[in-house]
Structure formats: C-alpha cells, structure tokens
Length: 352
Image (cartoon, rainbow, N blue to C red; front, top):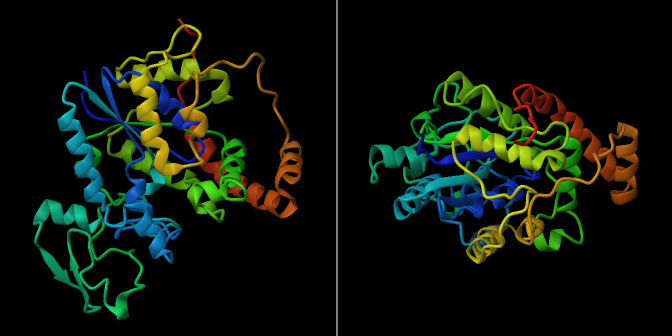
C-alpha cells in the first residue's frame, strides 16, 4: 500500500474543496493540507502570479510575503512528520506550480538552494545577487524594487512545466479532478466582481487563472515520466450528479477509505468542522459552501443539458453582455484542454 502523500491536482471552481471536505472527516487516518502552494504562487518572493505584483501591502498583509516554494515543501514535510500515523492528503490548484502565459519553467531558487547549499548564492549578469533560498538579496534596492519575481535565475529541467523538480514531484501520489469550464468559469468570474470581490480580495477576472492548460501540461508530463496512471477523476456528465461514485473511484485509485454514508452525507465531526474553517479561512469567499456543507447529496433529478445559447443568455442576465462575452471566450479557450483531459477520466460505476 502506498504511503505517499495524496495530491489532488485541479483547477479553480472544480468542486474540489467540497470533495476535499469529505476526506477531512477521516482525520483518524488522513491529515489534510489545503492549497499550500497558493501562498508562494500569489504572495511570496518567488510568486508566479501577477495578481499582487503591484500590491506590496496586500502581499505583506496576507502573512505569506516571505513564503517560498521550499517553505511550502518544508511545511508539508513537517506536518507529515508530526502526523506519522496518518497519510497526508493535499488538494491544490495545479497552475500554482506553473508559470502562466506559456512562459518556460525553471526550478524555484529556494528548492534548488535547499538541494545544493542553503548558503550558496550566485551573481547574475544584471548585477543583482540572488540568494538561492529564493529571496533576492537586492530586492530592497530602489533600482530593483519593482523587478518581477519571475523568470528565476535558475536552469529549467527538461520537459518539466513546473517549478518543482521531478525528484520532488515523484514523492506524491497524484490524482486529477476536472469540471466543465461552462460551470467553472462563470463560478470563478462571480468571485471577482461585486459584491463578492470585497470578500475574496480578487478585484479583476484573469482568464489565465482558470488553469486548464497548465493542468493538461502537468498531467502529460507526469504520464510521460510514469508518475501517474492512465486515468484521472473526471465528471461524466456532472460532478453534482455523481459525487458519491466519484469519491468511490478516487478511494480506489489512492487505496484509502472515505466516511460517507450510503446516502452520501458525512458525520458531523467537530474536529472536521474546525479544521475546515481554519484551512479555508485564507481564501474567504471561495469556500463558504464547503465549510457549512452537510454532505454530498445526489440531485433529485438529473441536471438538464443546455445549449451554448442558453448558457450565454444566463450569463448576460447575471453579469451583462460584456462580461458574458468574456466568460464565453474564456470557456471556449479552455474547452480543448478539458476535452483532452476528459478522455482519461474514470468512468462512474453504479455504487456497490
């Protein structure tokens, strides 16, 4: 039986947090870590996201402005050591490990420094010394104050689309979760406009944050390196229609067990509720439904299929014509990657 940390790799608004919420109830055998790499991706000195690039106060206020990718790995290792009698379960957004806009990836300096020498440093042609623990030694210099954190002054790893080396990726047991972009994109868009943006702190919609392209590239890389099997956890046709079956499938692929009852609800365990509130608190506005959820319940009737025109009409009514165009363009831009990944999806079987 594998004891590697389970890594559920997904994209935003894939119902993945509700899925994770189920596994949190098995605190007797699992230790859950919620989206740890987002701290480095958005706020740290090695950040790959542009969302807070011009918002230094926002990065500092987050509490993660000094968090590097190695910091996150140290946290995972530390929590695994603290809970040696449990298997680690991580749910995270795949594009937190991948430079956006098709930029080539190179290994995060903090990880490279940890592997080589904590005190090693190098001087780049720009004249700036970069400490390989990920912190730019010249970052407080006025001439370098607004220097982007990426690209890194490190070498790429052949074919690896992430900033994490294969030697570390192979330590995780990966499984993947996808949702149709016609559901995920408008859900994400809603989190970036009033009134919800005042809660989430995301004040603009960035199509690059949908992450389907990055998910596909990471999946293909891990398959090519034989680090994952031939299947992923998909939705056929609707995750909401098949949540109980989907959970059974992922338990099979990771050789763990769940705590759902025959009807798909899970026991109200105080420790689980407290952990969910604490874990999800850093992403306010995104996970309230999962925090207060009473379980995963099957729909009374199957979700009706809609045409593109019907979806567009709904989005115009909810968000306006310009926003609906943006949503449609984003959905269409994600479809090829979604359809490709869906080819590898696990097939839902009848519940035993």
